[in-house]
Image (cartoon, rainbow, N blue to C red; front, side):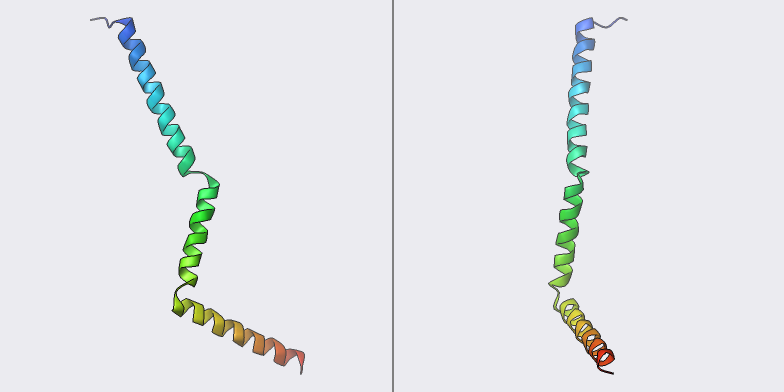
Length: 73
């Protein structure tokens, strides 16, 4: 049973449209800037946690004290 050439062309056009849409979605999802923004948001969320923030402040203060002691010895 042969298919109508017009029906085949419509099917091909629909497939092209669907493929173009899928490629557009993939290009948006895989854009490097999006990964950078997600990474920034993740780091900011971690730094806004008081436990992490105070731990980093403590480590920074300890490093500062050690460096100052080494400089004046």
